[in-house]
Image 1 (cartoon, rainbow, N blue to C red):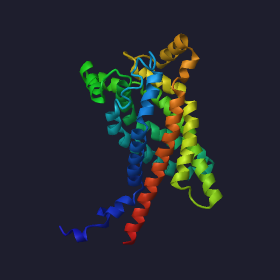
Image 2 (cartoon, rainbow, N blue to C red):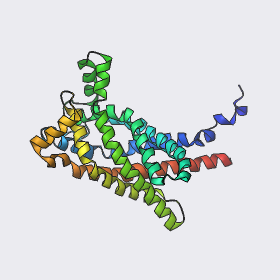
Image 3 (spheres, rainbow, N blue to C red):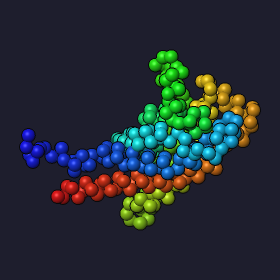
Image 4 (cartoon, rainbow, N blue to C red):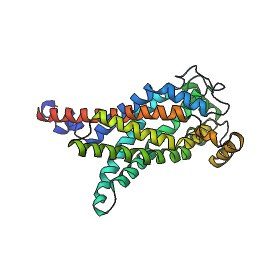
Length: 291
């Protein structure tokens, strides 16, 4: 075949012209950047929230335990979120003319995006947190234990997705707070400056919105951590009652400081990197189109 006469759809420029491809690449880049750079803070947060306390679950040592699962899961999880988020947001924008607000559109798009991303994120979290809490020496050992300790594919599946419900319960309120705030601040800045918010501004707004959402959803994060680290599967309601009865309501806010710091910095890196990568890919596509 003469590749000089190949259809335009096979060219790199036409691939980058797709907003879904740009979302896929930019989302994967943003997810990997934030998870790897802030992994030690995530480990400290997990150990603070774990039953038994910080030092019993590893203390200050081995703060990169479980990072293998993050390397494997960050890019596809974040990419899946942003592809879904952008697609749903674009689709729902047609409804804004009939009365639905931009905030509602962003809430719905972010919620659906999180549900999609959790198909990758939950198994990653289960494996990662068991290594972080020093139950296993590495992500690989945690994963291998799930497959060897369970006698059927159904049991393996249930173990990999333990905490699915409470993770969704945490992620949807989080994104319902963070993404409308982030989008609204970018729009406000754009109107004030007469241009789109740049990646640095997007990063600042991502930090502020992330910190607010992180503080508000910390009790759900504590509940998720306890469910994923429990030796046996247990209900979210029983776990919640048990935490309050044995440790008091203050235990529901364990790890709030590293969580807020982690997600505040992470929001800046994640959403700033997303806007930077997406903008760079759009510029590359325009240059390729002109050649």
